[in-house]
Length: 120
Length: 107
Image (cartoon, rainbow over all chains, first blue to last red; front, side):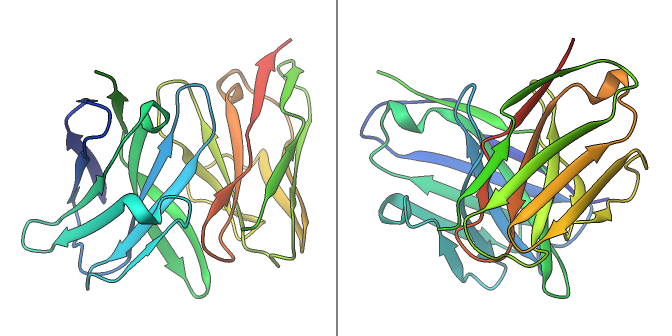
């Protein structure tokens, strides 16, 4: 049973860089697409982007200029960096696997989520 | 980007009720539509994938239908544990996008 767990600092100052890591357990990271999704308090879900185990990425155009994702297959981890953060980046950040069945795909499983607050 | 619009945004219902939530895509997405349930403080949980396929372990009272731009999630007989927020999500193209959510509350 694949499980995901986010980790990282919960408080980031404006203009600085948000950094999170997702650890995959119960399975190898060496397949699938690994995603970051965020949810501002009381609001809906926003897909940030994904990284393939090979390192190829696909980012949401709305965040592309500020996002960098990386993968460490030796540690079964993938990471998110979001620079120049503002209060609008305050959200619960989830990591999730993109499961594939033919051409169909969906997010499952998800990590439990981690709240990141941007504040001085 | 493909815009996903859910209706209603909130819904009050009672245990035993039949509930239907609608999701509309801004362009044709064939059957590339997933449904998730989210409870407060928890991550979303997959219910339905490919518009109508029930995820393993999800009760059969949940069902999905639709194709193209119009989709529905139906709960045939509402149970106490079903009060939550429901999201549709298109998996046809990037960026992946979600509906704004439908909050299902007890009447």
